[in-house]
Image (cartoon, rainbow, N blue to C red):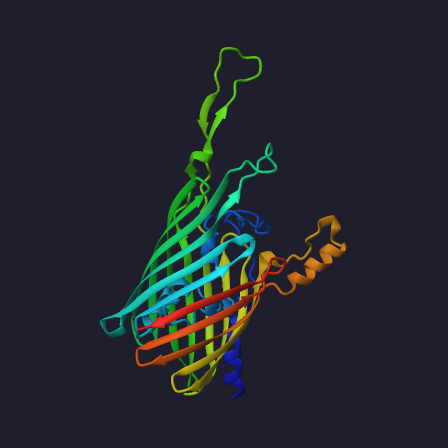
Length: 376
């Protein structure tokens, strides 16, 4: 029994242990040089959680997900559901920004296949424009809207393995500058039993695709004549924007049901992720699901995620010993903590669920997230 418990613990710790690897380097270069492209990618909204259940589990949800939310977390999980589903999630972030995710999916060929479509949007509107010459505002305003439309296909190759693929069209509108790109997610899910209880493993590549280049009226400028020249009019010109890659990530996760019966379930989860634009991270989570009565279920969830690029609490530079820096460091200690719960009712193929998640973002205001799911 001790050996079996040690094996289970090792499986859950593997994703976290992977995070101890060295930073990304380019072949033929000094291995001590970190070539991570911090802040060098576009469409960061693609990394925001798609639903409240996954947000409460800190992103370690990919090995467990088997419903419509799989289109965000792991497309391989979509084929593990057995009913048509729809979901909607809304989150209000800092500075009056909003994020929404919606999806709809249906099983095909008796559940062997699954197909789904999803929509993600992030942005804000009607913000005043300030310039160096008009620090009180120009009287104009601007909006930002970032959108992704995805199509997901998932297949169960056997009773233990499934895989899925999502193709998505990504667009950004920053004031009057726009850009488009195409991205893909690919995921796998291996599900089996260990000591008579389910264990699952996931391997995922997200947001791999084409680069995005912005264009539009904000890049049009006028070049004044050089000082001392005569009879030369200002010349119109257009700035050329650099191309930015999408926020690609590789993720590997494990989920194991420590307790599983007809009335309750306790699942432990762990996941490691390696982004191309920041340091690696890892997370641990737990979910307890209780059958309250016939058809009714309640769940409690909690997690902690380590984000390498948010780990430096020296926010004050030369002012690191000030009271302000001390307060910021205290807030940073809670960065990555998330918890939440959910209520669900199911009768036959019909069901409804409501999920909630609280996410601590360190020095930024905490986020409250709500999701609704329907089965039919």
